Length: 263
Image 1 (cartoon, rainbow, N blue to C red):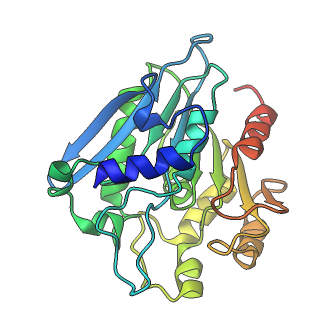
Image 2: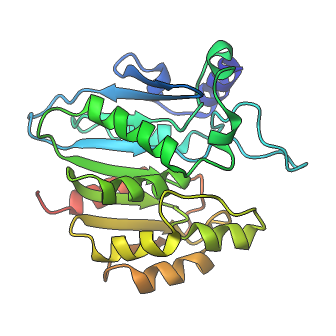
């Protein structure tokens, strides 16, 4: 299962290799009763006081046309993994897979399907991601959170919970999960915070934040972005012409990182 997923990702990726296959990234694990979450850390090669860049993957492999969840949630496109691999300016990078992604067959057998379906935005996966960040960061090191798609929702939740976050960048993220599920005819999904509370928290947050969307995105379409623009701080939401959901967001994210004020 995982070998096929890795082969597909390798075939469609560009150099450098993705974190699960890159020896420069060190694998770390968070194992709980029925949940296994993996991360890969590439230590920085530049000055020690640089923030840890944390890239959180999207929801993973889509459901089948028959509306059945995938047996293996490992992403086919690996948009978050590609982004993490290409942020190679010397800063430390932590790539966080979502629950039960990139597991061996043996590991996957002990991972509950609920954590890549109806509970993927709930407190338990959020706590697993937080634990991996705590393990990867150095004492007093600040954190920049970057979340792709559903990983952006979790990145926003983490940013509001932690006191070490200096910046948040979400990429094609359905920050209003209630509106997103309604648009796509999906059953409501439990979240760590109600959508209204999450949006209100971001509107009042003191860390730097940027929310990036694509004009050609059909997963998180522009119709969902207008309410985000109204609720977020001025000039923190940007729509990129020509970009769709799984396109290469690296140039946009790099430019956003370069625009951040030192902190």
